[in-house]
Length: 212
Image 1 (cartoon, rainbow, N blue to C red):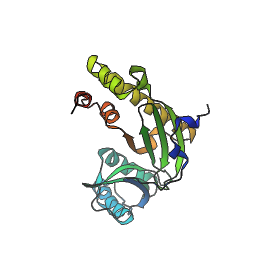
Image 2 (cartoon, rainbow, N blue to C red; image 1 turned 90 degrees about the horizontal axis):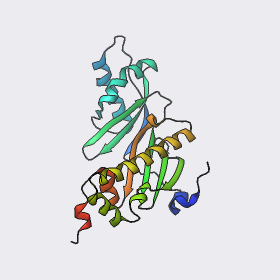
Image 3 (cartoon, rainbow, N blue to C red; image 1 turned 120 degrees about the vertical axis):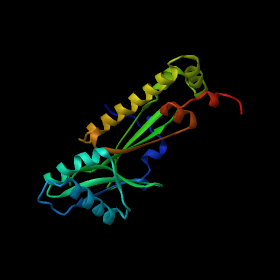
Image 4 (cartoon, helix red, strand yellow; image 1 turned 90 degrees about the vertical axis):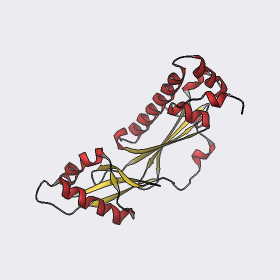
């Protein structure tokens, strides 16, 4: 079905440079004639160092598990997604050389949700989707939702589950729209006000409903 632009913020139609802590690139490892997992681990980060200008990148367990099969199945070449932060950088995804890692960005408002699917290698926005925030069923404004979370034993979890399921559905729909899978999403970022962040992450909200 066609998505109405009224569910998206005005900035959605503006072209802006991608600002992301996660980048994607291609990397090639030196061949190894033996099934040497240590060889893969020693040489793979050096290729990432050169391409990403990253120092001693860490590898997630899921990346280490997938790395030998990906390298040997694609002539020692792979695509990687690397997240850079204050503690250094981490390889968060590895795939076939022609795979393009995706990013999922969300503007989580009190009333509306806006989602964007981004190619992390080019910075191009591939798809956009908007919908009402389902938490509105529990309260039309922030204070009403905080009150609901405090007055019902499972209230906070109901609010969190509602928005998480909505975001997962948006991600699935956009991936289908561009012929991709949610497994291709290497990173996600969610922006919202303080109450929305706390409810989304399952953090306590009692202090947010009290006078300073």
